Image (tube, rainbow, N blue to C red; front, top):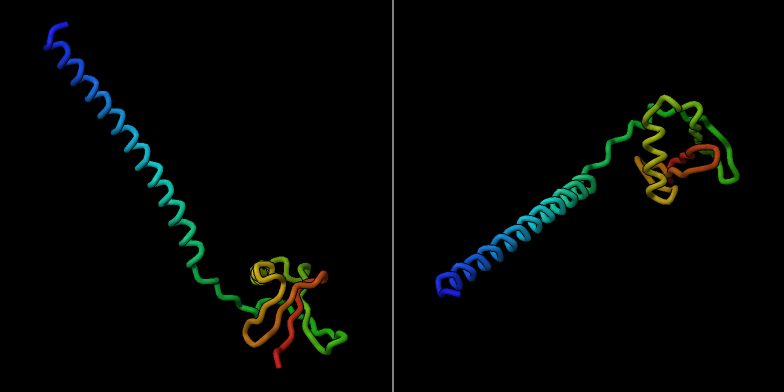
Length: 118
């Protein structure tokens, strides 16, 4: 084989290796971009402030329990009220109990209980 052919073959191998390396780099950058987009989406969801609740929209019924007076909101009376569903969702995120606007809220089988904090 002539020296010229050997050089051409070596150059072709180098070129093929360069092409393969660039393809791998492209794939890596594409993957990194997809990862970046997933991280951005996660952070945007985590950093979004909670939508403020208007608790006056929820229909509360006075009740008396073993620990005194409280108010109860039931799903049937609040089916069309987004605030009830949002409060219920937030309570589930907080293990069924939380304090908000100087009231203690908790999930019950019957609905959502609310009692003014002392």
